[in-house]
Image (tube, rainbow over all chains, first blue to last red; front, side):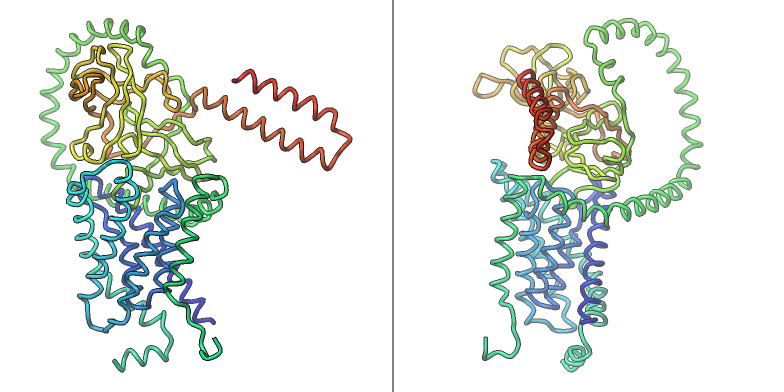
Length: 177
Length: 326
């Protein structure tokens, strides 16, 4: 029980930190570069490490936080992050300790799904149909930058997951693998 | 269930339920925005203080790094500026002559005076929309400083956007170059109106969309674009930008084109919030308040039947107010 509370607190802390960093980063970036999506990284990597259910909860609350701040429709980002969590959690069975490629692919896929969903709901439905432009100018640059950042962050998240989030029993299992 | 010793949730079931929850929230947030306020305030109370702190730290570092660069620059600049002063002095005498003319024109359009009078609140930008799709930002002043929804935000003499959401210590501003924003505008040279809307594609070039100008309107490139009288949320006469290009639509009914906004949206640091909500809006608010009063009276009727008479007269008064406003 104590362990569970600790996990929840740590995850909440990570969500808030990622959100604030992302918020401040987007302020800094201006027109120079697109903003990497740290919350997607968080959701995808933890989805890969822990599984769909956990990732969906993380995604849901991350999205809710984003919604509460920048969107007039509450629930849209929550829904998209939720699906990203579900998607990334499906790859949990591929989990292997020293593999870095798979989480990167998941992050790229997750970010792509999120942005595509956002484009379809918020832009395409308003008759902004130039998909090529939005793809090349916003989605692809964001995916690339997000994956680059994920490459750096993955180790940190993995350490947090390994040292804090799992019980001793599970830890020995991972070691054994 | 009996066979399994451990109860495990199927992800598919979870995603199904959560989807329903999300869609439910979306529907509620569109239909009854009041109910979702708690979610917003809860999020804000955690994040805003930290964000303000990070902003301070960031500002400090950019200041220090900037100082080193500056020393070199300043020396070179000093030379340049001295030369410039000479040139400017000549220009100045010319401009002084033009000033009289300008004053006359200003009086004519009553542009400037209009929004100089409004009370303003200065605020810092502390965060931006987390996605790359929209242009909204967060400022560090909220309802505590008298900011309300639909107040106009200016910076550097031009219109920046409008407050769309207010918390106790923060407010969200949607810029006019946001893809979902549109502003009713008019032109300084003629009294024609048009609609300036943000567009993500044009943002790349630093432009805004301009549509809906009548065919006969005599507008041309370089014309000053200001917010129009008929806009229901933007105060009249705030500078938006200048016409970059304008041409007749293919349907031969309207003219459309693009605007260069005066505000540099990439480097907004501090903004001014005009503490005035456009009048017709204010009327609506008062009627809403009256409605509230009515409902409040209804409640008190239930609890205190003695005061029913005075309440009735009051509600009659408010009703007459309503009809006046309409």
